[in-house]
Amino acid sequence: MDNSELSSPLLYSPPSSRDDADDRYDTLDTTKKQFISPRSLTSSINDGSTLATSGLSSGGDPERGEGYSGDLAPTNSDRVENKMSGFMLAVLIFFTISGGPIGVEPSIKAAGNLYAIIGFAVMPILWALPEVLMTTELGLRYPCASGGVRWCEEAFGPKAGLLVGYVGWISGVANNATLPVLFLRYVTNQFYPHLYDDINALLRYGILVGITLLLSIVNYRGVEIVGKVLLVVLVISMTPFLIMVIMGIPQVNTDRWLQTPNGGTETFNDDHFDDLNQTGWFPQYAAGIALRPFINNLYWCYNGFDQAGHYSSSVTKVAFKRGMAASFFMVCSAYLVPVLIATGASNLSQSEWTAGAFATAATEIGGKWLGNWIVVGVGFALVALFFGEMSADSLQLMGMAELGQVPSIFATKSRYNTPTYAILIGTALILCLIPFKFTFIVELSNVGYCFAVTMEFLAFFQLRIRKANDIKLLRKIGNVLLLIPTM
Image 1 (cartoon, rainbow, N blue to C red):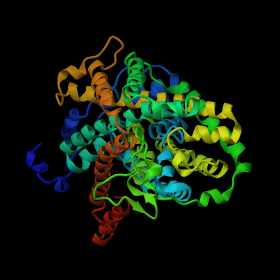
Image 2: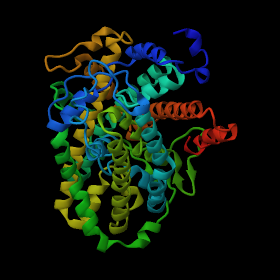
Image 3: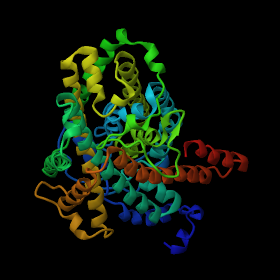
Image 4: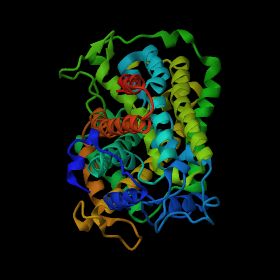
């Protein structure tokens, strides 16, 4: 490809012929093997086996929704049999994004009951729904395992796709660093309420290191949570929240939903978890709401629907649409409904809403046994989230190494067929991040994700405009303007 084509990404033109397209997608060596292959993924999900390989299929006709011809592309004989169901896709996306109302507490602490409820009711419409619609359209048009990387390559060229891949890896590792912090907070808040605040910083870090290393070693051994095991995790993690909702409905006092924030910084600060007394150009408070942590937490909670693009070649068109719709409903309800019940049926003050507060609220609503079950369920969900994120991140880095984008040492595989040094560097970065406050790690993850998903939205509108050559210019401009509220 002539490098001049990349001089201005927005002026990048698609291949003029099918042969040119095949030639250009020889450059999918830039992303090949970065992601779990559709064939190995669906086989693992269907039979519960361990994922052992990765790859990116290429070729095929995206307009007909076909898979792409390549070494790992589905054959005609397994094109139907190996497709996962829409429900399984929804469960996968659910655990990619949420896993339950885990980590939402800072929003309530920053904004109070009323504005937190409004936030979790409005954010799906303002942010999650546009992301779902964008992912659904592009996933159906370009069904392949590279997801957003492919979309950005189509719109702006290979360099843009690679950049999205790099930034996405950093964001994913940072997101994984939040999970040990959340787990420790939930356990100590339920079983040792005063330990977390009184614990020595070095000891706290040592505990987090132990949790991280244990999970990383298990991941290194090649253990994957897929198939029926994932469904078991879903039942274990969500059942206690469902029981809390059922038992809490008769106890709800709607007046509690109307409680507004007190705006006192001394109420919010937590030496290890939160820091709402922040400086910088962004306004600290509006109507008593600590804006920066509130917006960051809401954004973090609803991030990740675009990851469904990686599974787009592993499901039928109908199943992909149904899976996206079901995952949207699952994620949104898993946040909003427990927040409504926990704030309305418990007497927790605004300052008490830190990580682990759901277990405290469940204890007040149903008893100690329910609070303990919440902690167990959260533990299972966080393990599933950690394994899934680390597997995807390490496989992506291994793929980059195989293509010469990073040192070849990261392509080294262990005897368990896992990317040894890719897992090691991911673990090392997590160990560097876990000493920081939860809100800081969330912000770091959000920065990377915001860049990546912005590129994907820009690619979406670029491809929309390019595809609609016969549409009037006014309609083209209107399509682009739709991006502004989401941005």
